[in-house]
Length: 381
Ligand SMILES: *Cc1c(COP(=O)(O)O)cnc(C)c1O
Image (cartoon, rainbow, N blue to C red; front, side, top):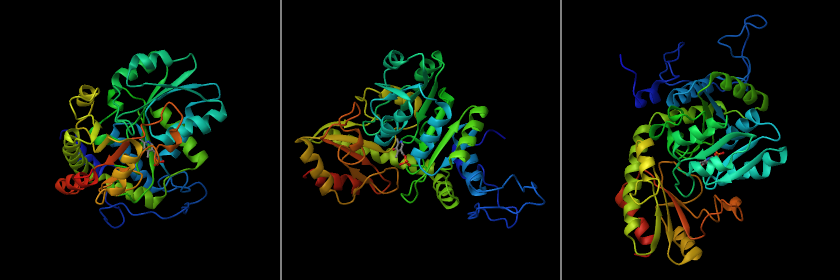
């Protein structure tokens, strides 16, 4: 048999029918500890659920298979996964190159938490490999990129970035939250670590907060697993189960998210009150060719700028009805938000500050005609 395709792996990896009952979906092992058959006689290696839990194991094996990695690890949130990664691979005095366009919470983790422990960072326009090279120091241990980026949908060439990072002996970390492994496979392009907020497309239903790391190198996977257990911000069994359930439909959801977002982006691109559309599927997007090369499709996130400045952008958000005004992204329902005042408020005054007339959409999988009609009315006809 040939290698199973992504859709098949998403539904089956890590999930044999339950040996005791034949249940086709892994049970939620809502348990903290496990009976030992004599001292140290662990059944299947399970000892205590911070260290390992069967529902979490199913998710972790599934994540590793989806990203083509040696090891997957599931955390209580995307930021918990990032924190575990930073504290595993860095010591005080080490340096990281981070993007000038990224999730505001990731920036806050570097600027207001990691920096206090002596981890240095430089902000670079990571879409330009030359800018990354210029930011490297002799203490650079990691290059961090987010592609597509949040909220400006910037595109970074993963293979080119891996080459620059590896020349310097640094790891390439890719936040793959916006694309999901269905649309983009960073490890196959040379990245060392993939980061996810599984809260977003992986969970896909706005009902769980979670995070993940997937690594290509088994030894790094071991070190991360040690820190995951030593620090303890693990995904709980029910949360792991919800993400696993979401992943089963990831491929079909991402196809619909991408198709709907493309229609929305083209409509906005022609709208008189919209001054700029950020969507990598548009030919005029500076990263369009790179995105077309490294992604299967362009994803469900679209940002745009509104004529009339901040108040006009806020007004559009307030007038939307079907698009729900809220933070987060990647669920089946469409969301709208004002990054400057909402998700990216923590980046105000920093090099990651976002334009104040920016609106961000997470385009859901509703009927696209309904979505277009709602945006048209929110923009004032
Ligand atoms: C939401 C998000 C995160 C943080 O994940 P949480 O699950 O909210 O902790 C990291 N990166 C990106 C791109 C995100 O959108």
